[in-house]
Image (cartoon, rainbow, N blue to C red):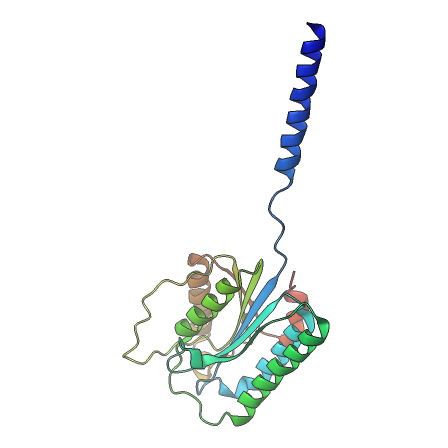
Length: 224
């Protein structure tokens, strides 16, 4: 009798340990990262394209194999494939990753060089929709949306942008939010634009921050 009880107790203990081990073996941690750079080319902001090149160079230097990068632009109607400038998921082979990064940089440089006419309107919401779709499709563990814009949305009358945006698990970083000439007369308008976008992002499940000085980008935004 004592031997049977002892054997049962040993089997029970082994079962508990096995269950504990299985509980400890959860899903593997997803450390991949995805970033999207959204560039405003409307008339009030188009002169800032070099800032987009600087930001992209920073991201290319920090993203690694398995990470993804997309670049797009904001114009009159931004939720289209033609608004994508470049995109890539970097290969596990270092030589291929190096080539992909060179191609992304070349595609952005070519866009900047051939750019001539700023857009009359700025469909920022459409650009955010485009970027969030890209970031969510990557299924990366960390997702970043960088917006280079004055954040003044000026939609053409035919566009409907009364639609929700899924920014869950996306960190939105407004970079170089340029002050408009009219903001000098009414500084509160600038603050209200920032506050309005912060509210929209956070209500859509995202995180929000502003980095106006590109020199501070590395210390302010750590790509985990």
